[in-house]
Image (cartoon, rainbow, N blue to C red; front, side, top):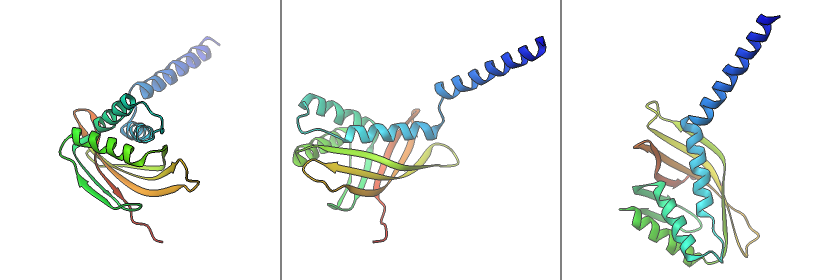
Length: 166
């Protein structure tokens, strides 16, 4: 009976250790998914947002991006731009917010992360769902993020629209 109790206790300790290891040291795919969820949260904004909060959010969003970020998005407006610095990213995010006005809710769903064999870069294919105030229509866009591990952090290096069949 003692041996069964000890084996059960050992199994519980091992399971707890494995769970703790996974929580403390998540895999790259989980880290990338968390980072993308945070990017979607930071890209969302409310019409009555405090300007300092908007600046802080834009700076945090820029911190998730490589200074040489390339953006190539289609509809609703075609945008193709390579940023030279994080400050330029911040300025572009703030300009987009002020131009847009209203409220915007961004959500990334169906995220598929593909790691490179060296585990230093990855691609994330996802569906971006965006809803703006004053519009009952949901804007849905397929987007590909390219990320690179720099100094232990996953940074977005490229964002582009995926062309789908219509």
